[in-house]
Image (cartoon, rainbow, N blue to C red; front, side):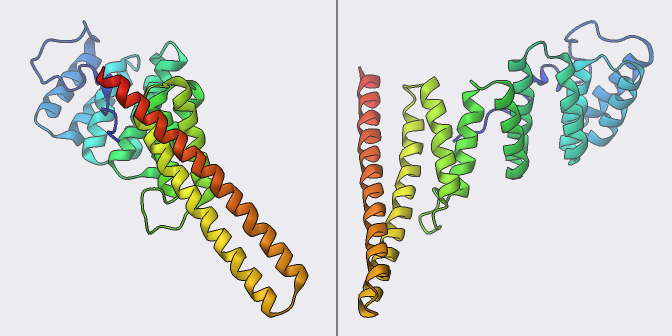
Length: 258
């Protein structure tokens, strides 16, 4: 899955010194420090750029683009704590929940690029709280849960709690984008891992039943056999889901060729 473009909302934050301005911009000290910041940014001196943008914002904090430039500079300098603080300042400039959600989603994407999945997940969740229809964030929450559940590693043991959560996220995406074949594929992988979990539990219960026969423990034998049957029935249910998902994927692919 491709990570969404980082800092989609940067706008002219990466404009080099001397490039046309995005707007009239601030006046006085705020403008002077912003210009110096742009010069340092153009020279890839991100630490000094961040310092100058900070001084510009101290003079005039109502500069959304400068907050974005400051965030980018901190990020490039390796100071994610300061970058996050600056990014979240841009929330004050967003008029609606969907735009605020984009800020959190972009921040989550940056943490993804830093391989900090815990903070990425936290911010994707914040995005979804603000915009429940944010399919991009929902897909990534599904992916992160699937990874935790072992769906992306054939040798990893299945963790049902996370796998079921992943399936829930994918179901939400499917409800919003019913013709997105990729989501059906991802859910199919998760369901396959859930089926594996039931298989392992069925085998364990069957082994317990055999041991109970040897021990002549009828009650334990009956209990183990009942559990084995239950897990077998759940395997059948997951098999049906796999077949249905496979059929749906085929239908979408066929329709796309027309």
